[in-house]
Length: 204
Image 1: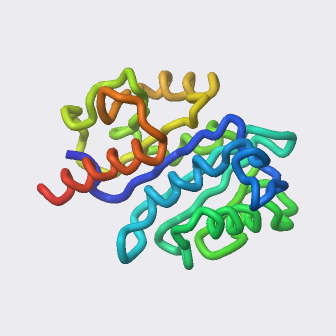
Image 2: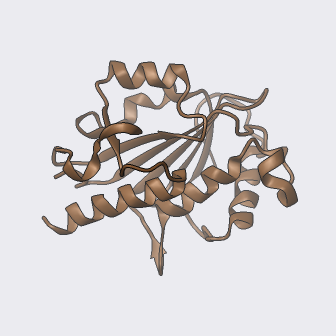
């Protein structure tokens, strides 16, 4: 069944800026394609008239001299997440440029945290029974057998996953799943995956 108790999404951005030094009027060219992942945030959190409160998204930024950094958004306490890409880019810029002194997680806005480190700093929080690696070569998610309980879904950008993340997933026995026979944009893949998890949850 799966997805009884929350969802965690890990987005690995191999080129995206961890500094916040990007131009809002030219986001794709100046942010390392952070725009791809902002659209994934919308797919993960936003419903037609509301916000998914049982979702946590962790965005692993690997793309510049400030990397690696992780931005964590927690739906249970997140406020005022707007659906347009520019507003989300402004929010991300504020998170990444906030003054934080020490190591560890820092909440810079309600439900918005930032930390140093890469994927390895997150794996202790992953749901081991339903650790899903979204990959075109994987088993069709619609046919996959999932255990009851929460789900962690890991996906990369248009460059895929970095070697360190792949090694962690392989070591943890992650299940590779796909959402269909054609390659689609990351936010569309995430929306389809969430739709399948929604269907499973409503069928319980």
